[in-house]
Length: 480
Ligand code: FAD
Ligand code: NAD
Image 1 (cartoon, rainbow, N blue to C red):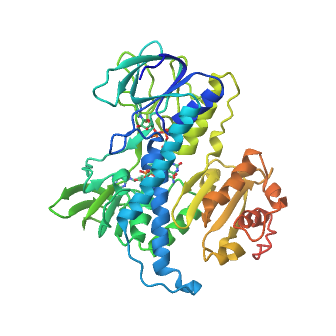
Image 2: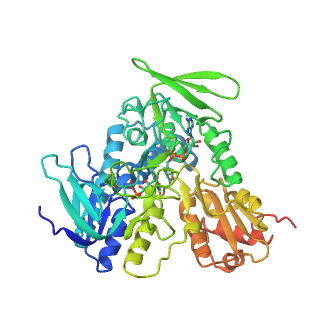
Image 3: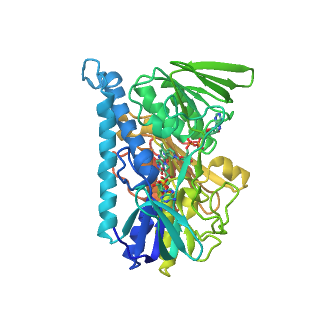
C-alpha cells in the first residue's frame, strides 16, 4: 500500500484516545493518519487499543456472562423460576466475548475508513522535525517515514510487572491472560485489590473459582469515598471474595501444577497455594521506543509524557493523550482528551473539564462516582452538606431484587453547588450520569431536587439524595 506521506495530523495509537482524536481531526477537515500496532492472535489488525481488545469491553462481556451464570444458579428461585443447576461452557463464553470485540473493532476500522483516515498497521516512532518512522507489523515490509504538521501520541499503557511474581502468561498472568482462561481455575490469587482485581476477581468468583486477593495497602479502595469503600468491602466478602489487606507479596514459585505465593502481612510471612495468579498492581504508560534517542520529549515523574492542560508536550505541535499522560487511566478520559486536542489543533476552544471525569467499578453492586470524596473535602477544609439515600427504599431497585447500596451527594454548605456524587448500587454507572451532567452545568443539589425523575426508576435515588441534602427526602425518615 502506498501512502501520501504528508498529513495535517498523525496520531500514534488507535485506542479510545487515538482513534477518537483521529476521527474528530478528520471531521474538522484535517488530513489525518493513524498508526497502530495492535494485532490479534491471527496477526490481524484490531484497532480499539487495550480498552476494546483487552480491557473495558472483554471484561464487561465476562462480567455479564458470569453474572447470568450466577443468577441462574442462585437467584431465580426467588422469582418462582425453577431451573436445574446450570452448567458452564467456558469456550462459548469466551467466543461470545471475542465476537463482541471483533464486531466493535471492525466498526472502528470502518469508521476510520469512512472518515478518510489513513490507517498504518505498524509501530510509530517520533523523529526530529515532526517526522515519524513507521515500522510495519508485517516483518517483510520496509520501514518508511511520514510527516505530520501536528502529532498526537496516544500509545496507552501496559500492565505493571513485579519481581515477586513475574508474568509467564501461563500460570502467572496479567489482565489479558485472566480474560482468556480456557478453564475455570480452582484457586486464583490476585495480587492487587484495585479495579482490575475486583472486576476480574468477581468474574472468576461467580464462575466457581476460590479467589484470594492480596492487597498491599491496609485501606481498601482508597480512591473511593470511604462510605462506598466500606460498603463495597462488606458486599465482596459476603460474595465469597477472600480479600486480605496489608498483604505484600514477597515471592512466588511455580510448581508442576500449582503456584506458591508468599506474602507478608502485619503479623508474619504467609503462603498460599493456587492454580493461577493474576498480577493486577497497576499500569504504566507505554513510551518504550516511542521516540528516537535524539528527540527531546519531556517525561513526567510517573514515566508518562509531560503535558499541560491542553495536552501539549514540550515539543511544538506534539500532543499526548490518554493513558500515557497524567490523570486517571480511563477510556473516556482519553477519548475526551482526543476530541479536545483535535479542537485545539483546528484553532477552536478546548472544553475538557478534568475535574468531572466519572469513575466506575463494574462489580456487583457497581461503584461509581464523580467529583470530590468526603475525605478530600475534609482535607481541603471545604464546608459541605451531605444527602444520602439507600436503594433499599427505591421501588425500582426492589422490583429488580437489587436494593443494596446508596447514593451520596455532597454539596457546598454555602452555595449548594454539587461537589461530589458517590453511588454504590444497581447500574450505578448509568445512574451517575445524571449527576455528571448536573455538575457540568454547575448545578446545585437544589437543581436536582427540583428536577422531575420518572417513577419507578433507579435515578429517583439521586433525586431523593438531593432532597436529603436539605433533610427533605420523602421515602426515608429525615434527620430533623
Ligand atoms: P490504549 O487503549 O492502550 O491504546 C493504545 C494503542 O496504541 C494500542 O492499540 C497499542 O497497541 C498502540 N501502540 C502502542 N505503542 C505504539 C506505537 N509505538 N506505534 C503504534 N501503535 C502503538 N477504562 C474504562 O474507562 N472503563 C473500563 O471499564 C475499563 N476497563 C478496563 C479493564 C481492563 C482489564 C484494563 C486493562 C483496562 C481497563 N480500562 C477501562 C482502562 C482503559 O482500557 C484505558 O484507560 C484505555 O484503553 C486507554 O486508552 P488509550 O487510547 O490511551 O490507550
Ligand atoms: P489499581 O491501581 O486500580 O490497583 C492496583 C492495586 O494493587 C492497588 O490497590 C495497590 O495498592 C495494589 N498493589 C500494588 N503493588 C502491590 C503488591 N506488590 N502486592 C499487593 N498489592 C499491590 O490498578 P489495576 O487494578 O491494575 O488497574 C489499572 C488501571 O486500569 C487503573 O488505573 C484503572 O483506571 C484502569 N481500569 C479501569 C477500569 C474501570 O474503569 N472500570 C477497569 C479496569 C482497569
